[in-house]
Image (cartoon, rainbow, N blue to C red; front, side, top):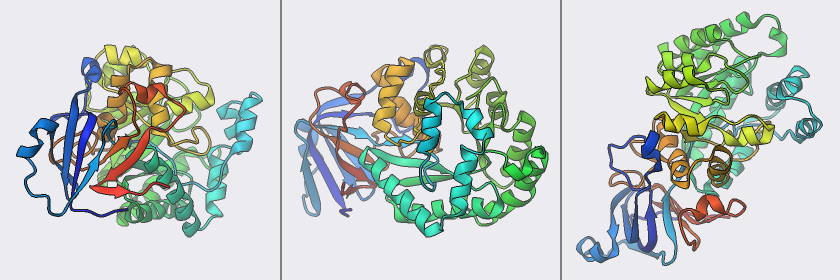
Amino acid sequence: MSRINRLLIVNIRLLNGIKDNDNMLVAGKQMSEWNCIENAYLLTEGSSISAFGPMHELDNVVEDEDDLRIIDARGRMVFPSFCDSHTHLVYAGSREIEYVDKIRGLSYEEIAKRGGGILNSAKRLHETSEEELVEQALERLNEIIAFGTGAVEIKSGYGLNTEDELKMLRVIHQLKMLSPLTIKSTFLGAHAVPLEFKGKQSEYVDLIINEMIPQVAGANLADFIDVFCDRGFFTPDDTERILMAGMKYGMKPKIHANELDYSGGIQVGVKYNALSVDHLEFTGDDEIEALLESDTMPTLLPGAAFFLNMIHAPARKMIEKGLPIALASDFNPGSSPSGNMQLILSMGCIMFRMTPEEALNACTINGAYAMGLSDQYGSIAIGKKANFFITKPIPTYEFMPYAYGSTKVATVILNGNIIKLN
């Protein structure tokens, strides 16, 4: 990482993702708006964006070139960094054998009932040291930085007991200190019911409420609290109990909802003013109406739907009804083993029939909103964090989702610093 005080990018073919400072999200028809400046410059001071505009105005902005590093971006574009608001990227090892089981026709729920899925990851995590978990996760973080991500949310949920949930959250806390990425942490003790609590789900919910949440909060290890509210996992009543307990300790809710069925999870999320409700494959008129009356961000995870060959969330209907949408990677070892937000951008267009403009907004400003970060991240605006990337030479911004098999990122700047890519 190259630390500099002032950075000037000149001759930018197209400066993308420009928004007003008070623009915290885009919804409905606004999602098709993608503001750009041709032949532009961008100036940073410290960790923030201090100025930008067309090149012909540059002489009026930069008079003193002392302590100024200049990058000529001729033929290249600049985009705000992706904001990935849903990942599980702290895990031990991979689960490619379950991948083969899926190919052979076993469902997600069938694999879980055999002790696979989340329970498999929980067993591996229990057997892996914090040091090794940090090392593995740092490799994944460096990979997503190279793909253009600048802010990421990471969940616990592979612990499923107090000791291992705290272990995961301590790892995420270390990653916050070690990585140039902006990281938000989420406590997801209610990710699955451990085998020892089979038939005693309410007792596990009691453990989360009475033991896990107070200890997580006491160590200040989580920004958010999450529950997997879906068929075969946690009920709406379970979810309400857990969310209320977490909220008493200042953890804002985020919900896994409606991936497997019409679970009621979306309505619970809205009731408790969740920052986001995520997955949403099963979203009907009632769910859309509930979301329209809320400040909750609907977040779609196309990587999981693709990997599990699931039905697609009704993104077009949601946008046409006036909702915002965020897209996130769901980076995890079982159902979405990729954190490549360039690929998620393409999937938004291919699978959900989103326009490039809608998908770009979903991966940037709306993803930032789903982490409570859109006042500082997710767009190009004066005073926002200098988190952006410079592309390789590309012809149009539509080329970003179009060329789904190649990386378009050449240079990454996070908090005003140039990040060295491997």
